Image (cartoon, rainbow, N blue to C red):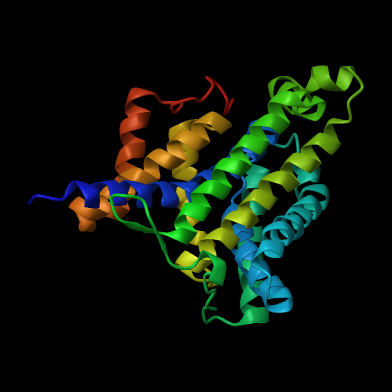
Length: 293
């Protein structure tokens, strides 16, 4: 079957928009794992909490732009509490302990949302200013999806500048390599871990808000994206922010193009891609050797 070139290009842009959500989720996971070596199974739940927080804030303020600021702050604050009082006591006990804790926490958060908001989904309409489509020359593309790609790009640039160009970013990079040396230099590593966990969960909450107009808001919305986020993180390399960005966009484009050419295979494509990458490069595209050791 022949496909018009315009349709293929449009599908590529759709993949970039889908990949932007994957990138935001995987960046948060990689931030937390890269420094804390915590496999955060509650990450999808924080994504869901971000969407519901957006529903509440938008209902109160009627301003989507305020939600873009308020949601990551609220979800990030929840992440700070979780790290300080739940995750921190488990440091040094092995990677399984925080994994099991966050796994259970995810179910607690889902049940709390069901109790507070019910089991039915809540619609989240695209903001009026971002409705419609933009003529890109090869076709009309939804304005909101372009906005999503743009927000992700701005956030990634800001995150890169923060980590690479600030003193706190230097501490984060040093702590990821050798936390003992950072302690010897007089840095309170526990505060660094706290802020990184809050930052990672805040980004997950923002991803939930941005995905809400496209995917709807339901208590279980974080379950499938958690699997997808871990696939992206594994493909890119556990703990690698560069890998999270490249793998997220790659997975988004692969899923989108498969949906065009072979829709029945779209759901399994990301797992086939992960298997292929791990066969060629077991630690992922940009992963460090022995990162799980």
